[in-house]
Length: 160
Image (cartoon, rainbow, N blue to C red; front, side):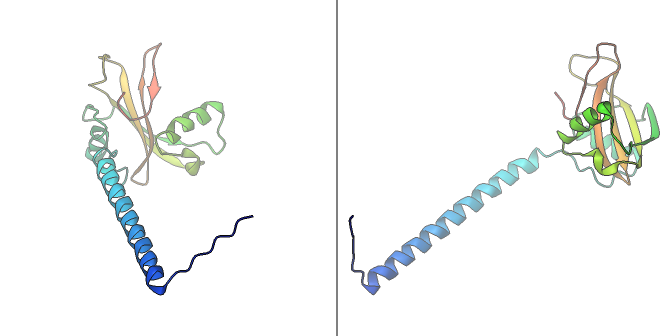
């Protein structure tokens, strides 16, 4: 067993405390500057706000925030009921929504509006692509982009 002893004067102890404090302040400043630049880059690439979607113009602008060019008027719009109990198909659809930061389980049993728009600028596909959004009380709560063809596809609102 080893025993180590040291004699510290008040002066050395004060210097050590000041040095530790300066190091802590420098670390805090460094971390806060790093977070600030991360927030700045995240803000520039953030998706559009899903709040205050009150008109057709708001919906088209929301979709253009993802880079989609859509027809000015929806192909269809209808009130739909989010089921109170999810079957396997709806569970899979909600899993897609969760990857985008939405969760339809919060809206079980609620009636929402579904708007479908024709997409004019899907990469390498010229027709039969739709983007759908679900709106509840002027807030987009989910959405997808899909192809209406037999060998179609479906994914979230982000452009591939």
